[in-house]
Image 1 (cartoon, rainbow, N blue to C red):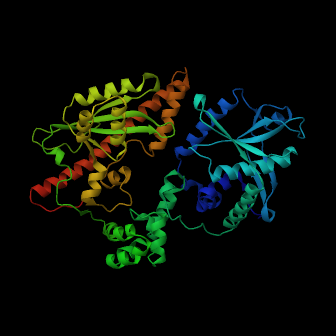
Image 2 (image 1 turned 45 degrees about the vertical axis):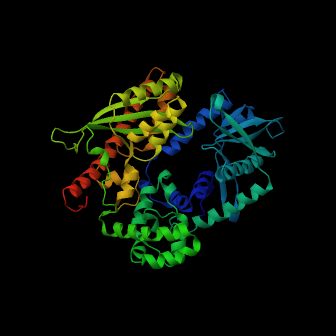
Image 3 (image 1 turned 90 degrees about the vertical axis):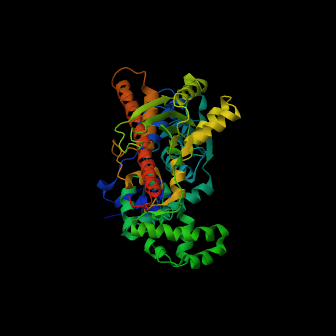
Length: 499
């Protein structure tokens, strides 16, 4: 059996993660998990291409021969390193001036980017497309085009595909080919934060847990893992068995911040190894709940690329007659407030303020700093006084910050998903995350006025966004209620108990 062809998709995966490219080629495809990030990219690509070329592109070789302004679906092949075959399917070709085998015109590849800058992944992919396209059309491809956004926010940037970039491409292809010749996948990456974007994340999570990978210890990223490996500490168990004072001394040469964090890393590894939470502060984590008649749970859904906080969702929680707080809210009283561009920010702030004023003095619990920052900035932009800002801040309670201050938990992450799941909470929609929620939002906004199946589907997507946002609020309550229970046991004179 010959060497597998080196494709643009494999190259894209390899740039992101060497292990991912190997799994794409040889892994058990049933172990892959669908994720929304690829669908989001394709949705954004469609909108960008429609702005660049409003007319529908033609297809393949026939489209090129006809001199169409835009062509999709052209399959390119060519020789690669070590006798391997290169294959690519450029997302879009744009007609430009020049002379090619089709006539007095030529084509250049077009790539739609996500994010705010052109990355190495974009450059290498355009370089591969340009290399193969030049041979296929018998005309030089000096530049590629990178586009992003649509409408008035549309951006375009030409990228030179010169010798330097082609040298980088050749080197990358050789290294990709070497990884594909391995009989087992490359090692897990040091910093696994970006693994949440990968369809192989479940597979690699299992491998990381099985080998006690240091990235499983909350607080350890790629740099700290490298420092620990240099000291001969290669696993969670190894870190848990380390003397914290000795580790602090060893890490001090790399900076005071590493010395200060050493004891925390060892303690976190030990808590995860033992599976039991540890109290860090003898005070009350949520003292605001002592006398409040009720509270509001608050969660925002955002489109980070558009800098758009499009949904502000609240759940109302009232204290029970016996003075306790309900453990189970059911679906809770949920209030979603949509923030549409056409309605304007002033109307959003008016609705938010009216809602908050309806429950004067009630604490507003959220998980993470996003909600607090966004709400305070919105209030400032809408002319709120310093006194109003101070009052608003006094009501906002970051459950994540309180949890980190008062407890150390046996979890690999202190994100809402990990902590609430450890406490037994389950989201009502399986496999849904913020990325899929964002995909639904963009589809709803794009197709909501269309008649027929697309319009109906987009309205269903909006309902699912509300359900996901409500569940995030209920998950926040699961964590907050656990903290309140531990506070209650402390007040009653009993020691903390595990979850």
